[in-house]
Image (cartoon, rainbow, N blue to C red; front, side, top):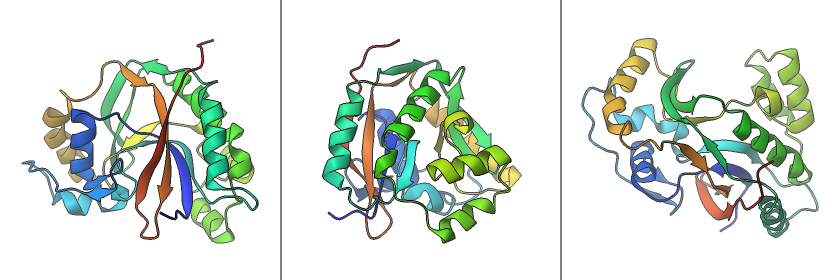
Length: 231
């Protein structure tokens, strides 16, 4: 399969959490297939509508945002570099995940200190940057519509994305934009289904190289175990 963009994600290992997340979004990123949405009462709108925007990405937390390959680089080279990097990065263990609102989105966020994961993401962003083609003028203009701070603008210029390094906030997006009342209703309806599935503690033992196909859907390419030693 040919991919037009690549990224480095956290994706949950196979199990009840990964299965429910794939069903909620309607896309199984590990197997690259559409799946039926679950039946959940109390939602303000059909799941298919509310998850239309994040569906193509699958259940994930972004570590290095999607990018086109730089001229002179290849997918094989990126895979090799990620494999090498994974031997130097240690697994991360955090307290857990919380069902939260980020602006008008519903997402899972880190419960407690996210610093170890932020440090990990920063290393990945910087170490693999040679494989990232510069963003187009169109993409830069789209990013700048979000009223970036001066620091975010500097990160966009340096790393192609404004929410990396010290601006990194790990999250697993569950919906597109919702009205305030809708977001609260989604949280209430989802909470009893998600609560028993959320990992405690939240562990990141590996990272996943993903690719975007011609239809805009993301697929797992390869999962890399983190085998480095903790500092």
